[in-house]
Length: 444
Image (cartoon, rainbow, N blue to C red):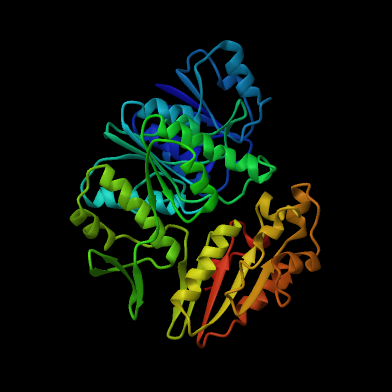
């Protein structure tokens, strides 16, 4: 097939482009800007656009399909051309469902933990020798592209509540029609799309209704909002909580059937995630023995609590946490793992939600387990998003911790990082941004 992708440079879209190319399709695409790693990866495959920008002449009746990315605007010239000539047009989630409509479909959703839980399910299936197609929001070791398209009988999709495309304001996960859904928890996010907690909650209510019409819902039972929604509808449901676990001298251990098994991840939230993964793979036919074999070889979650410096009495972690619930879980996990050491936590506020003055109070007390806490807040980032700038005093008050220090210059942050003590300390760096252009990974 000849397939053209509008907004090919996105994280998922460029992975889809590469997978389609690897499967033998003729792939083209356009975007107004493409950055690494997408830039290098598309170039390596020979499918990087020759020039950036939107080119309606690339959309012709010779195409079999146009796939629309969510970051394209509704007045995108290529989209308008596709509509004008009547070429087959699908959003990314519509395409994924069309590919998987005859498979057993699993959707893993939630405000936090969905990438981790999806990666856990995929590892367990691979460990047990099961073939599976997938969509996951991180590059997983040993899994190639972030999208897999084959004739496997199972499809596992990370389910995003964000809108599907400029033509379709439904959440992406509403296209997948799952046989099994996991919801890990609900914590208000994406305030630029869902301006109230109630509107955000409603997206997950739609998924619950849709799932229970045909399949099974697996949900975290200690999330009160989620449990209330789940209990409102009839159907096949499985509530879950964390596996019993313990911290040992060498790491963490999962307790199953009265026995302890060493694992490479830690934190209560990850023992919740792996419990959800367990219920999924049991539904897909794995035995307890296959689960135990797989969980012991499971790597730590992608982009989560990555160790970037390890010394005799010091560890530096780099984590993708950005939403309040993720920050809260991450800081608690590190505190639990290193109870005797001084914990220094640094958080960059970078996403639209985290820069919204009406949303920032959701972060109250999330950094409390740290002995020292810092916020990196670049006013230029807020300005570029046309948002009201939050003053340091506002941030300190919103986090409800008087000793938090606010850093607004990358040079000041660099000096802080260079002078962090490395005796009996742990440094936790959390961001989905880039600290104003400072590559902190290269510092360690």
